[in-house]
Amino acid sequence: MTVNVGLIGAGNISQTHARAAAAIPGVAVVAVQGTNAGKAQELAAAHGAKAYSELEAFLGHRPMEVVIIGSPSGVHAEQGIAAARRGLHVLVEKPIDVSTERADALIAAAEDAGVRLAVLFQDRLKPGIARLKELAQSGGLGRVLRVSARVPWYRPPDYYRLSRWRGRWALDGGGALMNQGIHTVDLLLWLLGDVTRVQARTATLLHEIESEDTAVALLEFEGGAVGVLEATTAAYPGYPRRVELSGTEGTAVLEHDRIVAADLRAARPDLLSAEGDRNLSASSPVVSDASGHQRLIEDFLRAIETGSRPACDGPEGRRSVELVEAIYRSARSLTSEPVGGAGDRRRPR
Image 1 (cartoon, rainbow, N blue to C red):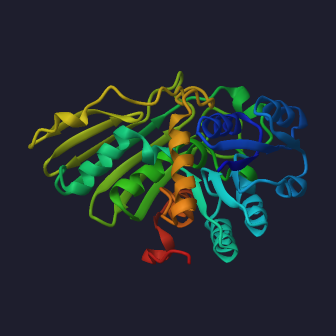
Image 2 (cartoon, helix red, strand yellow):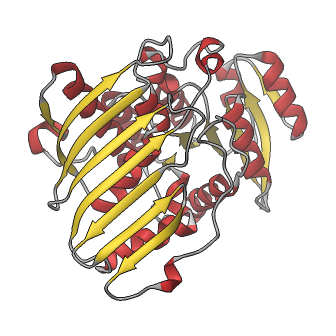
Image 3 (cartoon, rainbow, N blue to C red):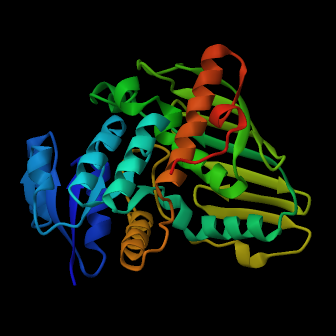
């Protein structure tokens, strides 16, 4: 049976969503909605779909069971809520939205409508990152002591100058951290658990934007580990994301999306692999390899069919926004900040 998918948004990331969905047997892209009529028509034509400029008309398209949202971050919840109320399952590009308040509203709307909700943090299903998760969970690193996470990326001035939303608080929710660094924020939470306190500084060092192009944060994890997170779009020409995890039994290093070093007391040569998605994200917003997105869309469709939990459901997708909000609060106040309401670890229903 064919699963009919509609796309909200027609920019770079929606093109990736379209390629990823179309590569899955039994999945058809049937409708595209975008405020740029030319881009929406072009993307729709490439997949034999129907183009819409108005959201309400798009949501009425049938047959359609699933929508994938790739619009500016600050309208994700609004559009996702509208889709859920029409009985459509919702897969939303990261971040889930730009505030936990909006994330909570979307999570509640999906639950009330009885539809599935997930967030596109495709790193969770990449083979090298999955091996790092298994290593951390199985005790292969022992007790994790420290983490260093660096996202030294670059975006040229036109990336912001020619956009109506990037780098703006209302629609991007921040800058290098909320947009580019959010994948690594999610990764740290997924690998190590909740952060209880942060101390941070942000700055706009290169680009003429409302929000930051550089952020540095000190993190204290619930499990006792401490860490440093750096994210920037001002590191010309752009370098791969790098995460180092050190524990009582050794150290593992992830570069972009594969483990490049694993120096452990108990050797694990199986962890090292040349396999990895070929992505130029360090220097370009264009995703050249859609395989990670494809795996996550497949996981979401499987969750719909079987009732299983998606790889990153709504409450999981909310966690990274909660931590970014705390980092921004700390940077504004020049103080350390608790995460999640002074240690309140409750999740939305």
